Amino acid sequence: MSKFNIKYLKPFKNIYVIVLIVFVVWMLFFDAHSWLFHHELNGDINELEYQKEHYRNEMAKDNKAIKELSTDEGIERTARETYYMKKPNEDIFIIEYEDSIPKQKKDE
Figure (spheres, rainbow, N blue to C red):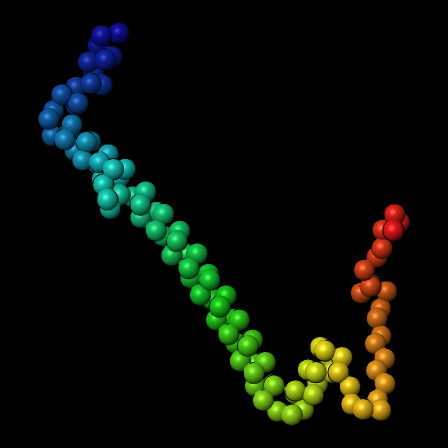
């Protein structure tokens, strides 16, 4: 049993190995520029890049809507379809399909 312990503990008697192990542990976990800190920052960068792409897509949709609403026909179509506005002496018929109507609970 003692030969087993001596065999595996022999490299740890060297001061350079001990210093190297302490240095590696310090740099990986305790330093201000540690691996854990960089891993967390990389996660934040990925999240921010996702948000940037999302907002670019939203801006593209908004620019398309602005371009559509810049004409009189686009404004009229949006007013009719979204807000159900009408011209005087005009009737509006709203057609709803069964799958678009919310179902009521039996208790109500």
